[in-house]
Image (tube, rainbow, N blue to C red; front, side):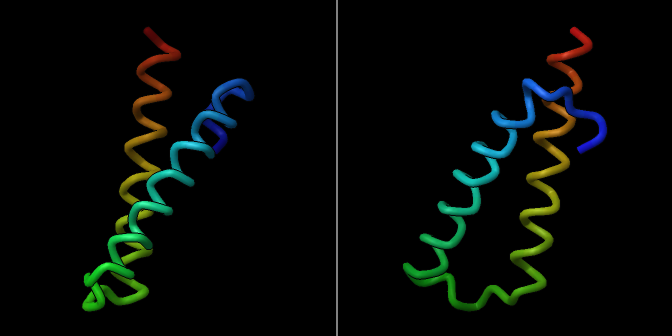
Length: 60
């Protein structure tokens, strides 16, 4: 998170929590075929997207 300014860290964390909650809800509702590695990769992608969004917003 070195690219994220302090004020955006909380927003980023809340957004990632929302994504994680949604992902695990979907898993409980029937997406049982996802492996732990699949979940890690999904979260990795989401973190990258959020960081890019924050950088874009910060840089204008």
